[in-house]
Image (cartoon, rainbow over all chains, first blue to last red; front, side):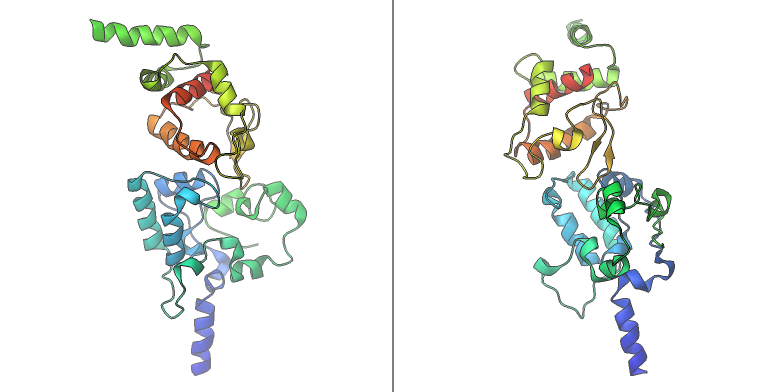
Length: 151
Length: 133
């Protein structure tokens, strides 16, 4: 029993693996889809934990080296959406604000999923991993839009 | 009567100086910034603004052309690789028609490229250049 619990916890800590078929669902909000999707694919809330989204939404004026700031009303609207739709950050793993991850492509489950699977040509075609729905040959734009990342 | 003549004069002035791609929505936005600017808009100054390398904003975006390419007629790419529709109004017809959207992108990108907000003069010059293209 204890063993099952430990395994269940370990699986739960890996958001990417906990979902059968890697289906993260479509973003059903037009504001979120348009604002986030203006510069990159609109990442689905369940790709990150709630504290990660909180940190991202608090730092839009320096968003991975880009000013992605929005009106305060739009910012809090989108922050609310992510807070509601993402999985809660684990209370057992206390992470300092500084160490809350914000880059999906650096998460352990993400790296594991992609290890040895992404050719240099695929990255070149898409530009970066964050543009995987645009001609990478790995994920289609249609699948990415509906939150489906199975390969 | 005066309230009618002034916007009319502004519209005639704008349409006389720029080729006919701008619709009423673009004229309205140009007028909005022209009213706050010190000098009449200049397509040349707008072009200079677009192509200049500043290096005073964020390190990875020294110039507008970093993402938009040197030609407003061509598609650009965001830093992650997403395609940006051409900036020239003649190529992307729905551009510069929503003031809130225009202000949002000026705020973000002026800070990102120059390291400060753009002045109304710079905004009207930039728009004039893109609308003329």
